[in-house]
Every structure is written in structure tokens, then in C-alpha cells.
Image 1: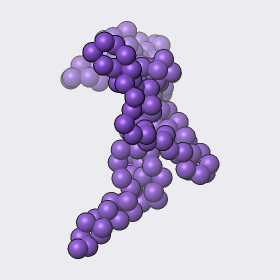
Image 2: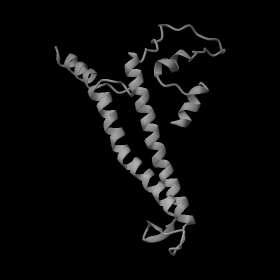
Image 3: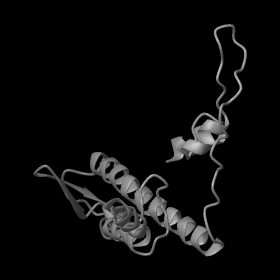
Image 4: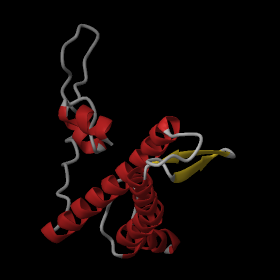
Length: 161
């Protein structure tokens, strides 16, 4: 997500096909721009402000849970490698990995447990929340995926003779 954000701000990647096509040129063999035969699709407004607010809040929540997930793996590995193979006065909390136990400080263990709890509870909540927002409430989180109402509308139009 961060990489896409960087590429998007540099004008290398685009969030929609219409935005991409607006920046494309069609060239002939001599390198001259060819006139377009039709108008490009307009970059659509993303809807009412309350939907943009919900979409932004969802993005922030998704990013927070994803970061907690990544940091928990990093912190666990770093703490496990630097941990003691036997309990000591300062490193008394066990961390287990692959049948091996290392001991870390209570503060490290508490931080790792918190990050794992946030990521393992937050990940299903973010996924289910995204499905509910996009498909059931009709707040488009993904431009290329139809909401349930759009899908059913398209389907009923296809069934009519």
C-alpha cells in the first residue's frame, strides 16, 4: 500500500482506468500524437462526503491492523533471537517458536501479545467490515468490484428479454 502510494504520487501508477487513460497519448510511427476518436471517460466523483469519510476511516483501520500484523512478526523475531535460552532475573517471560523456547523481558512479551491480539482480532474484523461496507451498504471500497446492488441490477437487466 505504501509502495502504491509512492508510485501514485509520482504519477507512475493510477487508481482507476479512467485516470490512467487521461494521461495516455496515442502516437503514430513518426512519434506525433494522434487525435482521440472518442472522449475519455470522466474520472468519477467518489460519491457523497459521508461515503468518502467512511472509506477513509476504513483505509486507516486497515492500515493500522496491517501495520500491527507486520510489526508483531518483526518484534517477535527480533525478541526471540535476542532472548535468553534460560530464564534470568530480567528475561523471565517465555516465547516459543518451532519447539524452542527463549525468554524475554515482561515488557517485550506484553508488547508482542498486544500486537498479536490487535492483528489477529483486527484482521477478521477489517475483512468482514470491508465486505459489509462494500457489498451490503454499497460504499465502494474497490472501484473494479460491483456492489451487491450493482450486481443484482446488472443480472436482472441480463435476464430480461
